[in-house]
Image (cartoon, rainbow, N blue to C red; front, side):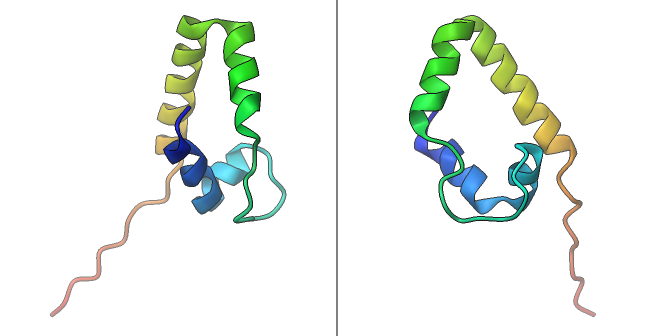
Length: 71
């Protein structure tokens, strides 16, 4: 998991909620070593499949983007 994913979690209220956090925080939600340990236990292929599912589900719960049309 790259630093970008950690940035995405720290910047996105919806992903924090999905991860079970009770309130929004800009602090790091997870220690990077947590994901290393999970990957070791699951195996690389299974972890990648799991990660793909998490990303797909988080994309589906994003609120729609509102476009302001100028008249």
